[in-house]
Image (cartoon, rainbow over all chains, first blue to last red; front, side, top):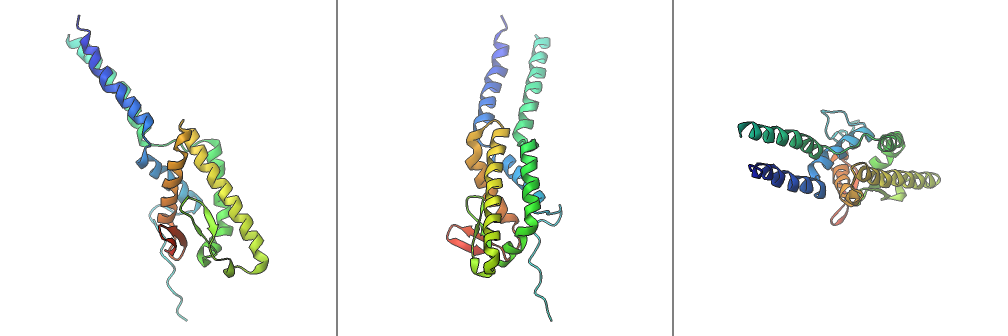
Length: 58
Length: 138
């Protein structure tokens, strides 16, 4: 009968699953890396890249 | 008919939402990853002066390596070597664990190269890193 209605989501969703699972999520990996690096190097949010300390003038 | 379309729509939303969430984040909250991160964080206190002096630097494959041993007093060189080895053990394990935690062990190399870029990006000015053309000072 109106069974074709179910074909639409099926054709949309199935490839989506495959896509998400096969391709490396680069943006998500970057986010995860940043989080771990901030933790390891104790970088507080806000001070993204601590600049080199200004040369001491003495 | 309308009712059926509605059902389809709801079904689509219900299926799409978790998929979108899964794509937005990588799983990094496992006991193994947390303990590796803590171990590296504890070691950073010891490594930090060597990063700053250029004794060690960040490599292209997401690890650390001795860059200029001459800046380290002879008696401390073994210590630096041991720190570098321990840090690299943790880093290798970390990349592997993240790949496994997300159900894709084959992602390890890509995770490693993502980290390699981000370590350098977040490194402090004056630290050394391996670029395309060899060692460079940030």
